[in-house]
Image (cartoon, rainbow over all chains, first blue to last red; front, side, top):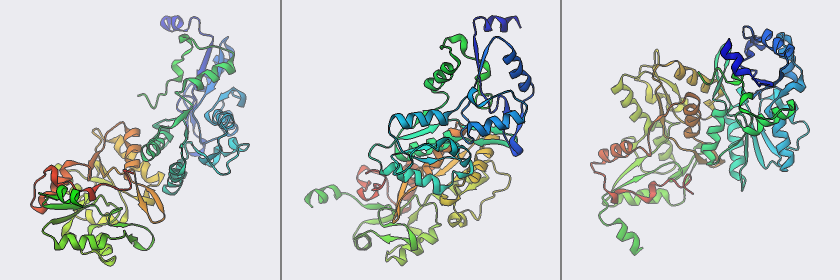
Length: 222
Length: 222
């Protein structure tokens, strides 16, 4: 406990991952991980600033927050940093019109984005929509572009559901990278810009002390 | 022509690729590439030994040869070196029982293989059978093995069909390699053992002069 107190000295904010840290997704929405509902409540009662930083890319923030509130978490949409809104900002800044290889659940985040005559591919954790047909469509589009741009919402290898381990977007990103001979731009963790935008939203700046052990992905770094 | 004659001096055999060299696969079986039927016929009339060396992994050799004969090629099953029979030999030698992530067309090649209680995964160009569900099943099995063994029939990035470019097994191999943190064993081109087995079947040994320009994959090395 003393070691923890020392480690937390000077810490002003905490970034919390969601999937695999607060809850395990699965049938019926998923289940909270033991102690996590109370941990979030205690952090919110403390002097620390709290923000949620997720690579969730199957659900919109709205859907995710509704699910978490149903599981008992004190969380609101504007406390969540997620890759889809960050990707939308990049698309707008660079005049990119994406072909979307994504799950229907996250599609609302792209409602304001022009997807006509695509000049890039945005991929996310599409789950069952990672069919051969959909993968090949994205692949063919990239091969037709003079300068293929592939934006991936995260690069996770897999995640844990209550039913077991599930392939994440990173695996499919590697497939397209290899087939097209290109490198994807990753929006989301572990990109430093993504963390910076989360800190900005908290009104904090990055120092080593800000890195939280709770952010470590328990599933992916066993 | 003189340069060619010089290059061919001392050459005793020719290995011919099939897909993308003799024909382009596609709807209705595919179409022969201009001049290739006559080129095979001329080679067979010459003093050169001829063998067909393919990474085709969607069809059994029997099915492939029937298709090629229908397109006009002079070819028989025992002239074809293909990865599925090579993989079967490895499985038997090492006592491996595969989970098969393959296309139904190539399944007959594995008829004599014990697939109960799998202790490895064999993947091939599964086409539409590269569903998320099937990929995840192979992934979960590999993650459960103490020493995960993944055998891939080829590692092609893509191939050409009459309708356009198609993702090949290599892309999906990279997905599983990344997700599991392992390296696949590739059976088929460009593995030296695979070429050696083709040469052995011709009664020849490898010298630099044996490398045939016809073997270069026209699609994958543009």
